[in-house]
Amino acid sequence: MFPDSCLAAARRLLDACAARGLTLATAESCTAGLVAACLTEHPGSSAVVDRGWIVYDNEAKRELLGVRAETLARFGAVSERCARELALGALERSRCGLALAVTGIAGPGGGTAEKPVGLVHLAAARRDGLVLHRRCLFPGDRRAVRLASVEAVLELGLAVLEAGPAGPEASLA
Image 1 (cartoon, rainbow, N blue to C red):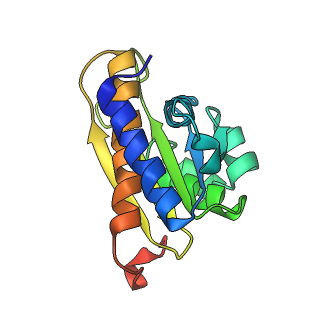
Image 2 (image 1 turned 90 degrees about the vertical axis):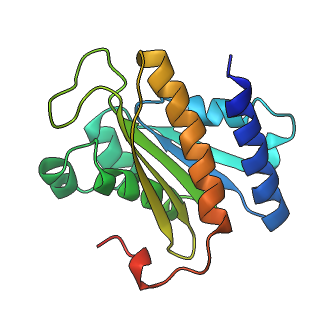
């Protein structure tokens, strides 16, 4: 179901979380559960994977993960701000030490000149307040964009675990 590169990224992240005694949560829009599914392809993943939210609809983003209406109105669901709020909302609503978030336009429709098909915003947040963001523009069809998003957010999760202590830039503002 998943390319070897996605499965390898999932294994690395699971191992890194296990070594640190951390669990993780996912907040997924355009990937609709594929990040959690990739992680749980591995036996023993239940020691790390705690929970996940599929929040395709903007109201679900607000209700379930606390994305602010102002964020959605001003920046849109496909934005850095929304990705960060999704990740932080997942942390706030769980006991996890790590949260991964994905929001984007997988296509084939829905893109604009400003936000084309393939635009994806990823965020990975640690309990200490550090949030890393990555803006990606993935080529290909819907399947390719979604799978590239899965691999990229898994790698971002590993990057946030390996980053140094959170500093003042870790805030959402």
